[in-house]
Length: 172
Image 1 (cartoon, rainbow, N blue to C red):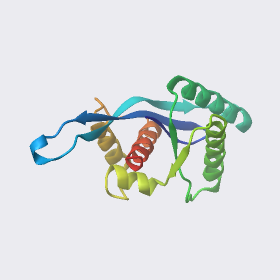
Image 2: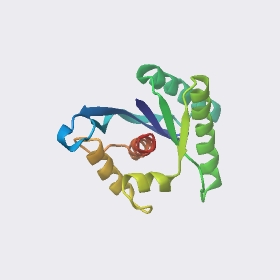
Image 3: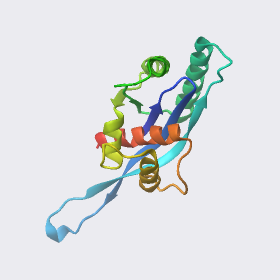
């Protein structure tokens, strides 16, 4: 199963693609147990879609749509996980993030990809086990969970990988 995690934004939208697969191994028959499966996660790709402030909002959203379509065409995700907006201090920020999220949801709907939404608190709890975890703590755990050689950068991509891992945990 392939999961595309998205951390939406007009200027920068982070994305992270993970593959969830199951290993089968046998357990000793004398204990009367059946074969059990162990689930593993593998990072396939991650990055950020960046748009320039020199373009209009409409053009930036069109660019985001085009890049998302390209990513979906290339990786063929089974699920799309996106950050749920729940509270922002800055109204200007929430509007641009909501617009970007709208594009993400539209692209997913057109491609008939199921969407799951997670709040930052849910992601932090799923990754670190602590709702007030720092960005650095999340990056460190993502590095460990996905067996990456270095911390995922930029922060938006690390957040997107965290959203994808949170989704994978839910889809056990």
